[in-house]
Image 1: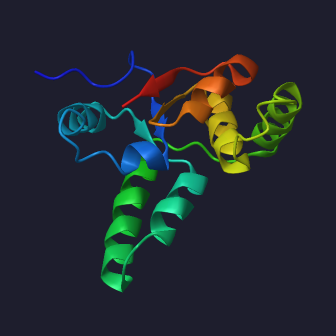
Image 2 (image 1 turned 120 degrees about the vertical axis):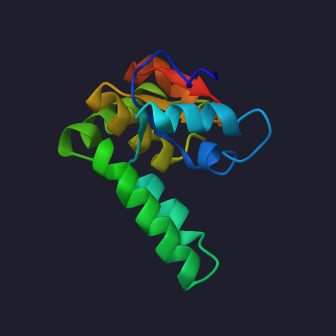
Length: 138
């Protein structure tokens, strides 16, 4: 049996992980994480995924799948998450300004719920210090 990603904490997946879910070496663990009920949706990630839909049919399929996942675990972008994102932005001043605002907000939303982030993006590793969430790479 394949072990899920992480250590049992729900994980907000980033678009970088979503886009790799079918890759060899990722698929089995992604499905194990899904089956364990540990994948969580942030509306900002859903927005990125839906925006990339090629046509109406794919949009409808993705929207249905993301909505089903969000029903189990979700990480909303609350006022508290926005305040944490602003604080992290201040803490990351200087050479780390290249962290995209969406990544900061996604990580802050995950941290606010006590969730980790499942990703394939070095920006999330930089955000662990200021936001204190588990960072899990696919």
